[in-house]
Image 1 (cartoon, rainbow, N blue to C red):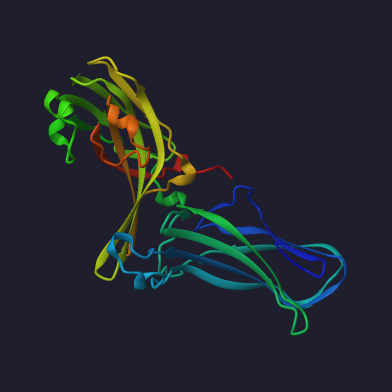
Image 2 (image 1 turned 120 degrees about the vertical axis):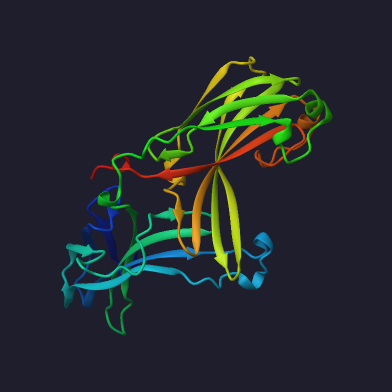
Length: 329
């Protein structure tokens, strides 16, 4: 919203959830409220969609001179005039608009990636109404973000049901040191996990503790988001923890099958993206914490970081969108 001399401008979209597909027109109204009549040179509407890549100084050994030098990837940028020059009467004025993101037959330079806000990668679509008023008056403007999802024609009805990936966790599969009593006593945990998921479906599988000489205190499932950016000749990767779910508390019974059922945080996830200069991937980290006095003495930090009293297993997770994942409009 913008304000100047008791005049306000708002962009109001036709859909309350602000979700559109690239094949659909973005529709709504420009709402102008003014106590007096105002003159304007024109009323223009602009749409700007881009992928903004950011590498923080020092990330993965990248020197600070890299910071901010990555140019945004332009997806769409166009401006249309919705009203020619004239006057806006006092009161509330609503100006309807309909803007095509891409025209039929128009060549597409860059793919319409889905809206995403991550740590180093932001895919954003903005709609801006501009009302220039000449040199003696401050121009009016208002900006609204809208959300892009994949077009229905490009989506499957539902993903092909994948085979469950079988995993096992033992003292021999760990790449970090373990406490001597855990290493020598041994443990074995097996399970199955679906590594391809629809955004609407839960992450599902099962896990069984077959043996463990040291009592277990907790078994947790962590969802990780991995953002990668190509900078020069190197790839900078940022891994973020987006959700943790405990599936067992305390020393579980041996050979008892535990279900894995984790609801995905839809606002923090998107379909997996593998583009040229960047990618957004997801992983599942299974952690098994063993009883140890050392664990109580250590401050809690990253729950997926290797610890002497923990066993870890990481599996890739491919997220896809299907037609039934999309919101009805």
